[in-house]
Image (cartoon, rainbow, N blue to C red; front, side, top):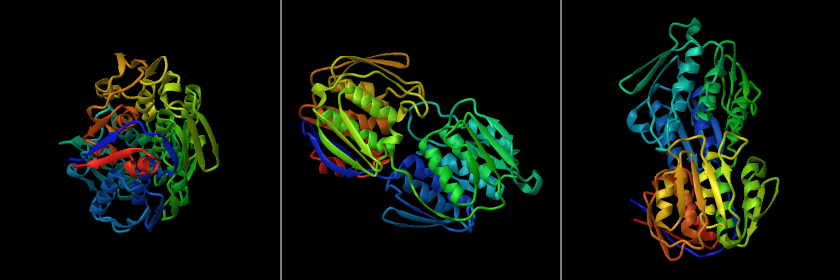
Length: 423
């Protein structure tokens, strides 16, 4: 199993290009199931989860061609409407095939998904939304069995559905399903994340009729069929945010190309509060900082977009453990998203937890040690801590990192870091 070995203490300088967003690419790949002609995508990141999704679609009968960051998906001859356990057990995003399979083919059999163990992310909102559109759904032997055979024309029916919790994948799944439903569907308390907006833009290019995206009420007027289109996946705001925090901690000046500041307002505001200088233009962000010794600790509280993203919580905790002062980090989205705390303490962090809030007291230095990654963003936070720790930090179980960061060590090394991947 691969590990990362980091020699800390190097400043970061230079420029890198941010990849397409994993959290946008995965649902858009699944949206290809809705189309009767090929969907052509660009800026698709080369990540483990993307590869797993492509294999899943190929297993269903889709023809997929990958050339660099360009992916063409032809789902015109889908022969299998099942997502088996062995193909989805490590990836929660696999639930995103449920809506399009049911909408286009009237049947789906999808294993209950796996993924990072950061807390409960129930699929009941997906199921209830599809049931509101008339689907008949049962859960048996770990599989979701769904059908529309009893409905007029065997098609989902438009409905009004209020989601009890804001859910990104739930919004995306139901938006895809509603695109081929009979009538109009209204999704209330919908997610506003940029990845939801990007997916809606792709669906619109495919012929869907969607309004209200980016607000908490999305309206979808179902159409008879969808066709392929060409679409570039939006840049990864979480990857960009991670490199911004890395530069703030190590000190230096870094320019991120293919990055949009308008997707990172809450993150950039907190970085400026901490003492970093952040500037941007339409397609890039530049950060300059003196390093962690000059940073001020900042309080953060995660919440759905446009508030501070839960996917940046662990990275900011890494910054706070070496910043000046005391900070509170409050996690409101996932109940198990402090699993990185114990590993940070091995490096010398001073953190105490009370419920969903971590009290972080900045220390003057960290010492390198062997730590274990527990989930995707926790892995990234340990990398950031390792970049400023004295001596050598070894991060085990980095397969989590490969699910969400494309060429992480290569990009960091191009900026002056010392990061090696070893077996």
